[in-house]
Image 1 (cartoon, rainbow, N blue to C red):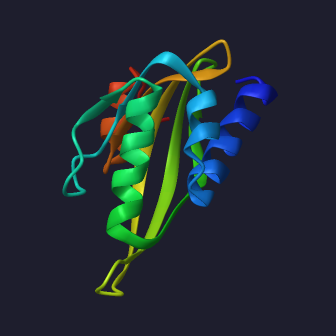
Image 2: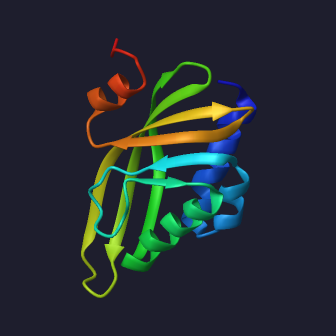
Length: 135
């Protein structure tokens, strides 16, 4: 993975944590496919296109008083495919309940921008989806 692509991904995390959908949209290809784990209520399985990515972000932010995602570990770096363990932390809007979960995201890049993201709750499922084996 090029340093520029990795820097773009980090900028995407920072933009998400600030709630800045415009930066996140700029870091994605026009045909981006943004997959979810299916564990959050109200989210569809896959969001297509930069505007849909902004809708995904708005849906998450509306359910949480505070929500942030941080990269915890680069599990595998295969050039244009990156498997990342992410920590997602949030505090429920209204309930104040604090939640933390680890998600494994498979990012596919084209020309340094995110073309596709798949998200899983299990490391092995992410590696399998990326066509990789742990090791």
